[in-house]
Image 1 (cartoon, rainbow, N blue to C red):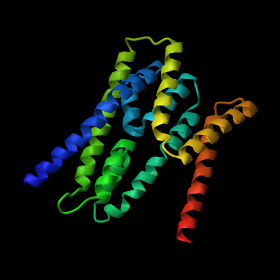
Image 2 (cartoon, rainbow, N blue to C red; image 1 turned 180 degrees about the horizontal axis):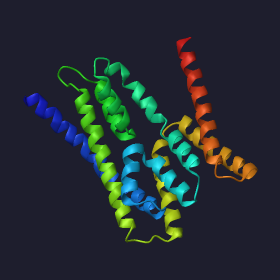
Image 3 (cartoon, one colour; image 1 turned 120 degrees about the vertical axis):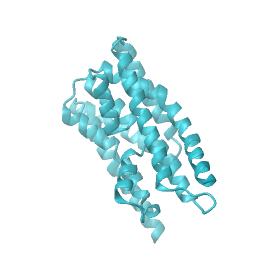
Image 4 (cartoon, one colour; image 1 turned 135 degrees about the vertical axis):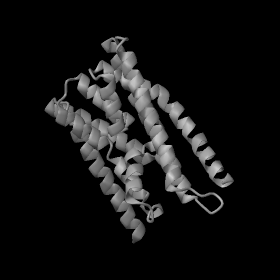
Length: 236
């Protein structure tokens, strides 16, 4: 019993920093989505279904530019595709777990909760156990907090009119804030440079906002190719 209490206490302690980190980002995201034309309940619904900060910021920018539904959907899908890889990596640790729990964990997994859960699964032992229920606690609490914070941001947005110049500045600042912490190795840096240069070239050629989708898709394919080649070299 004491062991269960200790694990749940640890789950709460691990969740709090993520939730506090989501507070300013969620409010900003909700505010920008509201400024783009979404109501607070639409923002809450989107946060529950998408649960992706970068994807929702991109969606806010595209909606504000009156982009088509297909463009928004494909952009969000591409930016959220990494979560499918997260879900696959849980497989070895959840072989005996009910499928609906695995599906629920996969659905609610974000970058931050994934980092904690995968580390806990890898280092689990009889003395320091980590179960699917513990992982679900982390993911569910952070998922709910994101919905609440973005909805609150959207509610504030109904009372606060953001000038377009400030809105654009906040959007750019948020993207930089999301990007910089991820530039932690040469591959990430090269991927950023390649995608940015490719997007500029495609924009010059096609003069369309769809180049964002094109550049992202091409960059994903190139990165996948190089990662696959690295894996093959390790095997041989």
